[in-house]
Image (cartoon, rainbow, N blue to C red; front, side):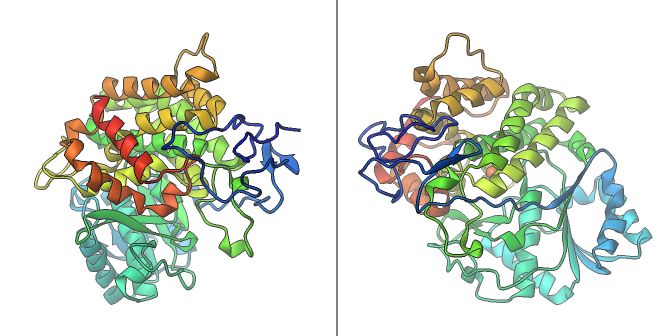
Length: 477
Ligand SMILES: [Fe+2]
C-alpha cells in the first residue's frame, strides 16, 4: 500500500507524488481533495495510482484513428471516401499551397472522386476574426467532411470552422469559460482528416482549437471531444521543408505537451464525476498518458536538437513527428498545465517580437516558444510535488543523473530544459521576447483566467504564484 498523505491531507501516489508540500507561501496545494486538512488513507492502488474515496477511480482514453509513415499522405483520397465524404472543405495556408505535398493531396482526392474546395486564408496563430472567416467559408460550402493540411493553426481553424458551420451559435458560446460561455458541442461533427505538416502541435490528436482573442488581448480556445479529428494522417516527410526555428518551436511544444501531461495532477485527485460525459478531457495524468509522455520525452531528448540543426536528418525529423503524435495523444487525455496557461498571455501580449522562419509582416511569438520560456520556472516550482517524476523526465531528456537525489529535482529539470533551449538558439526566457517587470501584472492577468489549464497543475497557481513564476521566467535569461 502506498504511503499515507502528507500533512496537506493529499494522498501521495506510488509513482512519485510522495511528500507533497508547499514550496512557499505562494505555492499552496490546489483542489478540494477529499478530507482536506485531515489524513486521508488511499482506498486502493490501481496501476500505480492511489484511489481515494469520493474521487475519480477511472480515467478515459479518447484518441483519433492514426496512420503514420512516409508516404501515407497519398492515402488521403481513399481515407476520405471511406469516411463517407464526397465534398470536403480543404483547409491549408498559402505557404503550404505551394509545396509538393499539397499536390499529393489534390491528386489523391481527385483520384478518389472527392470534390475539394480549398480555403488557404488560415491565419498563422489564428484569431477570433480568422476563425469567423473560416467558419463562414465552411457554412457556405455545405461540406460533408473536412481535410486540414498544415500546422496547428490550420488544424485548429478547421475544427472551429466545422463546429460553427454545423452548429451555428454566437461565437463566444463555445469558447472556454470564463472568457466564453463554454457551451458543450451539441452533437457529432462531420468527419475531419487532419494531416499535420509540422512536427509539433499534436492538434491532429486533440479536441482543442486555440485562437487569439484580439479585443481582449488574450489567447483562449474551444475544447471538446467532438472537435477531435476523426483520423490523423501523419506523414513525417512533410517535415523536410520546415525552417529550423519552426522545428525548434514546434519541437519544444511537443516536449512541453509531454512534460506537462507527465507532471499534471493525477486523474484520481479530482472528485468523481456524476456521469461519464462530465469527465473533462483535461482529466489529469493517468497510466495511458504516462506511456506516451515518457516516450515523447525520450525522443525529444534524442532528436530535437538534431532535427533543428539539419533539415536532411530524416531520422531526427521523423522521430520528432512520432514524438508529436505520442505527446498529442498524451495531452489530449491528460491536459497540459502552467507553461501553456502562461503562454496564452506571453503570445497574446506580444509587442514587436518577430521570429525567424515565421511571417515577418506582424509581431508573433510562436506557440512553442511562448510555452517553453515558462517551463524552467514552472518545473522548478512543481518538482517537490513529484520529484521522482521530474527526475525521470530529465533522465528521459538525456540528463546525466548520477548522484542526483529527489532534492535535486527542482534544479535538474530546469537546467536540462535551459541547456536544450540554448543548444537550439531558442530565447531563454521572457526578456528576449521584450517583456520586463513592468509587464508582470498583464502577464498574470492573461494566465490566471486559463482555469482549464491552471486547475490541472499539481500546485496552486493563484495571482501571487503566477507572478513569481513569470518573474523568474524574465530573469533566468
Ligand atoms: Fe501546445
